[in-house]
Amino acid sequence: MSLVVYYSSATGNTHNFVERLSVRALRIERKGEPLILNEPYVLVIPTYADNEGGGAVPKAVIHFLNHVGNRALIRAVVAGGNRNFGKMYALSGAVVARKCSVPCLYCFELRGTDDDVCRVRLRLNKFWKQQC
Image 1 (tube, helix red, strand yellow):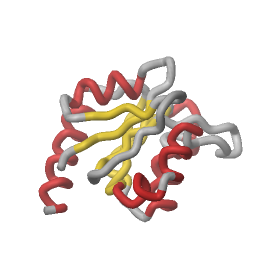
Image 2 (tube, rainbow, N blue to C red):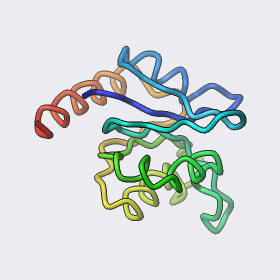
Image 3 (cartoon, rainbow, N blue to C red):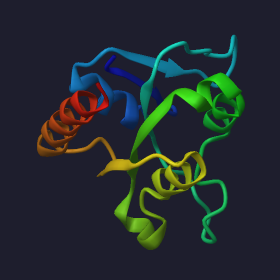
């Protein structure tokens, strides 16, 4: 019951972060067969926003969450971003958390630090224990 689902672009920042978490993870692909889940998960996503906040959530993630079953199984979100973008930093996490009525457990910058990885790993463990 400790599944992480994530999206990562060509930069690989989110992929690198999730890989360092050393958890069971599935990747949302931009193309190909849609990922359909049958168990609860925590979503880890990057942020891509314009100056107005538009486009913060990657389109592949929107398509994934538009599947009713996938949306029903989300339990929390972790968001990546870049502090250079000010108030748009990790905006995707706030957007998904609000729209799906789940908590945003953590925000990290770019590939995240080793401390970020440790903090997220601890928060995920605590979160999943509380879900039982």
